[in-house]
Length: 445
Image (cartoon, rainbow, N blue to C red; front, side, top):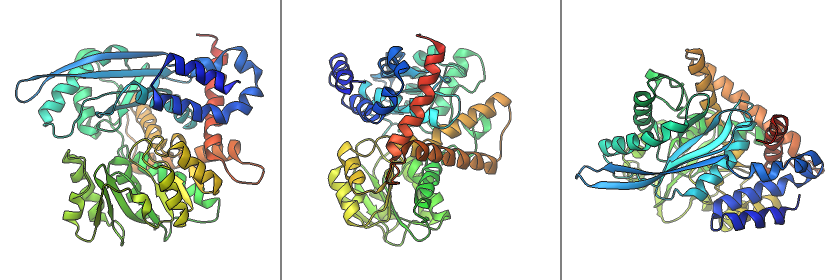
């Protein structure tokens, strides 16, 4: 495989799609050996086929705000690869959403879903709609208009979207209600549904739970655990909320949360009351973390700063892409951090990842670490197909096993000669081999 030739071709076809091109390069860099050792992949054009989505739907989303004014947003669905199962991936409602970001997320989703061992392909979607400051009625009208286009290309055996940034239980409810009306059927076409109408227990917490389970396995390779460890989290959404619960359960101490406005430092660690307050903070639609310090004066707010300057043992970035840069990585190393696990999608810049690699810091990439969310979505799909509900304990046990299995795959394919585990390579190779071999067996389609 000629990496530079592949990237040059992609850059000519998709100029300016920075996040997408970054994601493809980061994956392909780790696959050169396995592709070169398997000439059948090149003979059947696997790389050229896997880096391009099967199809992209772009559409306008007109809706009427509470003042009676017509607003228009852009909607997208990227169906990237369905070699091993229906397209599966979240919907993101955020002003930053564009085709590049959704293609990067959809591409990553292919390998993440393959790692779960569940039959799910990769996809992603969303809109540049901003839920911040909108009323419930405005969000409902937008969601219904969005689904008027999306419903034509999704289905329980075709494409099963879920939530992502800006899309929680409320939004999934509005989307599902409109889908059900249009399709005239009650199926598992969306995951993250309410418990009264097909949802799964622990789905909201699952990405955070899974990230901590994976980090627990990483620490175990060095005969360590979360007991007594100081942990930095970024964000304050579902991922951070779930991670904080599980870290406390395992004896760790979460000392930071963050938002676009800065971060809060809680020296004594988050307690149950603080974790519960995160639900209220998120529901406020303000998308800022400073109010946390009003509610809990012991929390120190640091405006326009990132949490990676605090001395911690473990860092789990849970907010958004490229939020942790080279300077942040050097701060973490300097302060004695031993483990970084990506709770969000690609939150560490390539330069930051390089710093962790050079210093032999345990580093888990998002496609492995945060696969617990989509894994539990897969479990929700299974429950919907079987027309039953598993208990919280059953779902949690299955999630824990999936995360252990993902870790085992990363170790198998990522252990280097000196014994260091390159989790980035391990996750990419394991996910790629499963999808690539399925594509080979199904012909050129």
